[in-house]
Image (cartoon, rainbow, N blue to C red; front, side, top):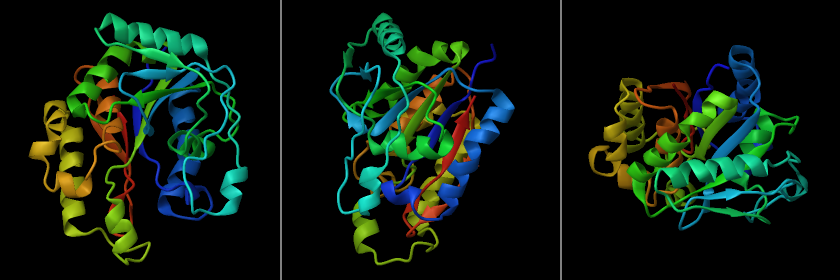
Length: 266
């Protein structure tokens, strides 16, 4: 079986599902494009920016529920479901791989799919027939930690598992809510500079620079006042294995500050 690449996706706001946008159009076609090129994954392991635990944690529900972890959006969003099954066996295997690399882990039940999971997957794989296991980030542990997590889980790719990091290439909500910019406003200079730096480092396979992005990347703290939405990117980069490089498969910006880029790493 050919190993799957890994993905980093910018999942955006929950109502991405309801309104036309370049990012929505990308999600709606990319799952099919990936399937034509690489086949159908046997399972999906997805690290979400909205699942933050002190130690690496995996959802072990056979039939996960839904988590509507947002407020103030359209009523119809709270009626949507994504009835994909879980795969407790995959949660156990993933936890074991991390433990063998020296990480403490836990498997948890009773936490439904958060919007970092079900919003993009509802577009990528609308049939909801591929088993999904969620993985928690550790928002206080930095990019290098998440690269190491990804590296430890890379063997799963050889067994039909599609590994996804779901976050945001940039994520400054204060600028989104208070900037007063149109939805299709062009990227601000400090957003574009950060975006360009990430693209150059991903294409070069410069994962060590990504590990130190907080110091090296221009305007890192403006684009990520907190790190949780960036960390799924180094996780996906690490999970692609030694020597991997990134290829950007989507780029768009919302309200001038929310870069919605997506990457394939292999």
